[in-house]
Image (cartoon, rainbow, N blue to C red; front, side):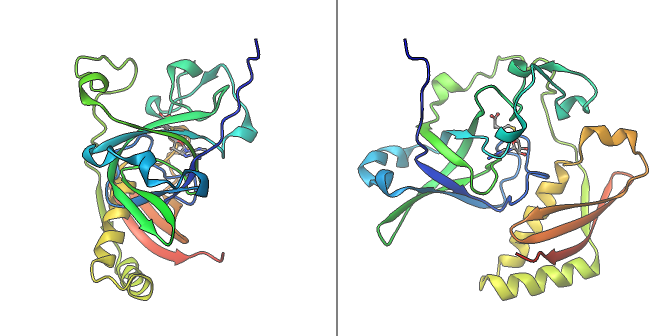
Length: 245
Ligand code: SAH
């Protein structure tokens, strides 16, 4: 039996997450921004998606393409355990797996047709910009939603109620950036909502409890460096700086 399978991605994700640090750890946690699955020409066939419009959510199967080089180990330290405890890779959702395949249920917001191309508009993704997607399947609640399920070492709720505030400098930068880039009057609010939701998730790595004095952090969204300071449960966004590309 030939046990090597090769799969061909159907398209690539375009998202605001241009760096791995700060991407939400599961889908649905940050809803403020829209991502796209841009299909490759061979698969940009509308008939292949007929019927999908009635589904609010989709499963995406994708490649953790930016984790492949690091390989895999039989045990991992999940961030939900503060990086302190090890569990088996197959008891985790770690990107570092023998077959680096990811699975996310995301919101489906419709199809975009533009100049012969085809893209799916998606909400709530936890995917790096450029992620190759292997497959799309409708989310079928009667089979896929299991409210009675127990969740092992993962706490049931992620709601941490962290307060996010913007410094006057960060607010001015958000205003200038959104005016220059998005001719949309809502652009500034959307950028602020996105940053607020991302930081509320607490992207800091678990091992930081070994460095309790560290206060200043930065992550990438689009081509921006978002800088913030942690001050006793409150988050102060200090600056938004365009990165040299
Ligand atoms: N919902 C998925 C992903 C869980 S891991 C699953 O359960 O399979 C989530 C982390 O994957 C994110 O925090 C992000 O840092 C990482 N990630 C997202 N896209 C990636 C990619 N293309 N390559 C490597 N890591 C990625």
